[in-house]
Image (cartoon, rainbow, N blue to C red; front, side, top):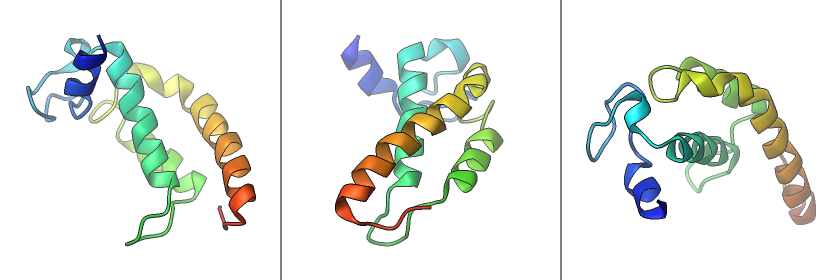
Length: 101
């Protein structure tokens, strides 16, 4: 199963992902959850070429991609996911004295 999740993690709900152009429920549910978490983590993290997004920006972006990039059935869980990331990142960032939105 882990290999399947890794292989599919760039697939999109609307079928425009890669490598196989899977659509909707053809994508393993664990992959759909991990793709969403990976996206939130990427936007919440600073990169050498940009600062992190604030939580409201992340929330809006994920909501706007629901049904295209992401499984719309996961939308009801977005508040919980964002809350978990905020809690995790506040501890991690407080320890490093970094600024975070």
